[in-house]
Amino acid sequence: MESRITELEIKISYTEDLVEELNRLVYRQQEQIDLLFREIRSLREQAQSAQPNEQRSLRDELPPHY
Image 1 (cartoon, one colour):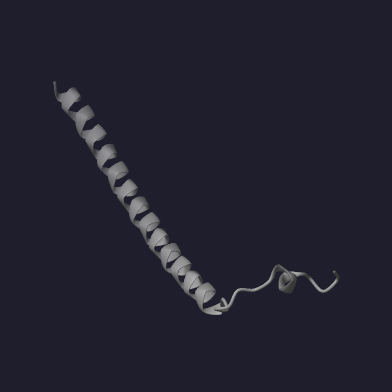
Image 2 (cartoon, helix red, strand yellow):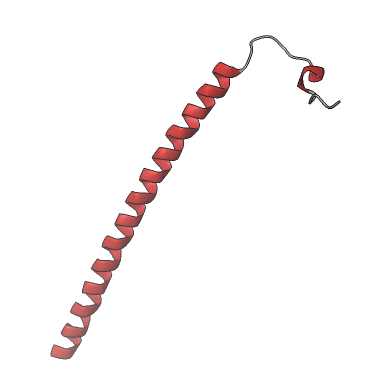
């Protein structure tokens, strides 16, 4: 009986370590997601402010070698 309890305690300890490690991983991933979200928002705002209000012709977009 004592060995079964010891074995269960060892398994619980490993499980607690794994859960803690997974929590840290999820936390770091959420930080990365938040950072990427802020960067996307910033890029979107930059793109919107850089776009001219008037419609442009596709000929205006041709590279100079055409």
